[in-house]
Structures are given as C-alpha cells and as structure tokens.
Image (cartoon, rainbow, N blue to C red; front, side):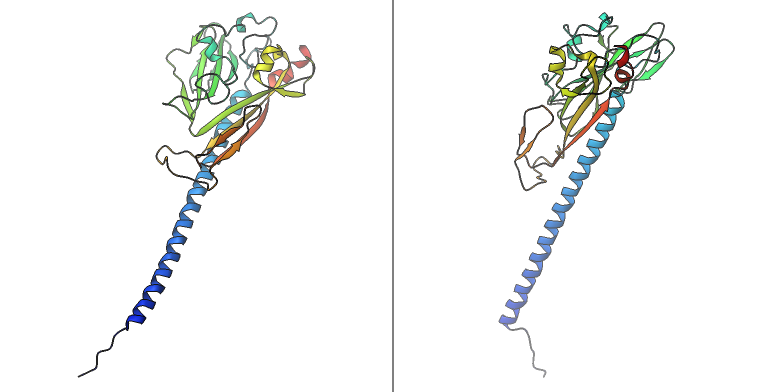
Length: 285
C-alpha cells in the first residue's frame, strides 16, 4: 500500500500568503487601470466638448452684423441696449422678451454671460440661424439675433443653449424654443475688443459688456474674446470623482474666480474672434 503524502500546514499558509499578495497586486493594477481609463475618458470628453462648442460659437460670432446687401448700412455687431447712429431699430432691450435677448453680464439663470449676435436677411435670401432654423428675407428685410448662453436651470443645467430673436416682430422666432447645442459646459464668459479710435481696425483693449454699454463704445468693437469652462460631470455617475485633488480654482476672463470641489475634471478653452464686418467698415465710421 502506497504511503499518502500532502501539504503541511506551513506550506499551505505560505501558498495562501503568496496567493493573497498576487491577488492584491492584480486588484491594485485593476483599480489603477480603471482610474486611468476614467480620467482619459473625462479628458477626451472635455476636449471634444470644448472644441465643438468653440467652433460652433466662432462660426456665428463671425456673422456679427452680417448682411447680404453690402450697399446698405451695416448692423450693430452685438445686440445691446443701444445701436450706432442711424440704427434706431436696434435701440431697446428695455421690454420683455427683448431684454432677455440682449447681451448681458451674468444675467439670471445663466452660468456666465449671454452673448447676442445680430444679423440681417434681405429679400430673396436665407440664412441658417444658430438653432438650425432657416430664416428668410421674404418681401422685406428681416432682422434676427442669435442668442447664446449656458443654462443654470434645473432642467437644462450646464447646457450651452441658443435661441433666435426676431427683432422685426419684437419676439422670439415663432414656434422655435431654445435648443441645446452641447452639454457639460460649466460657464461662458466673453469680452469685447475695442479699437483706440473709431477709425482704427485693431483692438487695443478688451472690456466687459457692461463697460462697452456704460461708455457707449459699440462703434469701436473689433473682436470678441470668449472663454468656456467644460466639465466631465456625468448625471449618471454623480459620485464619480475623476481627480484626486478635489478643490480647484478657475478664472475666466473678468469673471470672479470659481472655486469648485466636486472632483470632476475641467478645462478652459478660449479664442479671440475678429468681427470681420466691423473691421472692414472701420474707415467709414
């Protein structure tokens, strides 16, 4: 009869210890890899959000004061509570809903500033507005405003939104509600580049929309500097932390510093967009 042999208790304990060490190393590797993938996904999401939002805004900001008929007087380059000389149709922003369509610094229910870009559509022509609607000149010249902001409301929080204001009808474009351009935008701020003289083509300084309004300097607007703060916030993973450092400080142009401690990854994107129509007509001011 063969003698039966097995492991001793010490051998079993050593084997168990080795197994625990190996499993612990594998678990640590798995956790580290998972965090790296999550951070990479968040960074990729932020980059995609920032690039798309900035490209979209740039496209429409370049249309500031746009008209197909260059023989007529150009429009204001921003929709504010006053226009240039000879543009009485664009003096206002005192009644509702017109006041909700004007450019403003930190208005209610908005994360940051509200940017409003006017454009004109002449008879027989059509233009695609920021919400995707094709607006037409019909029998007479039509005046519209593309309005951009980041929502602070519960239903649409952190959404870059757009709505079209019909200046001729003094109301929002019929049957067109605000549309969401992209999610996960924490804030939007902008400044206006002003020339040193009415006839200069180059921006010499950048000011807030409040300064431009208070000093009545719309005629000197030459560019718009815009800044976006994107976030990796995911409504389906509210407790998901993407960075180990929870409190971070962010500064967008002239806005107060933002101190945020939810641990979500954020990035700042900025761009300076020349107002082509303002630059080309500067010598005529």
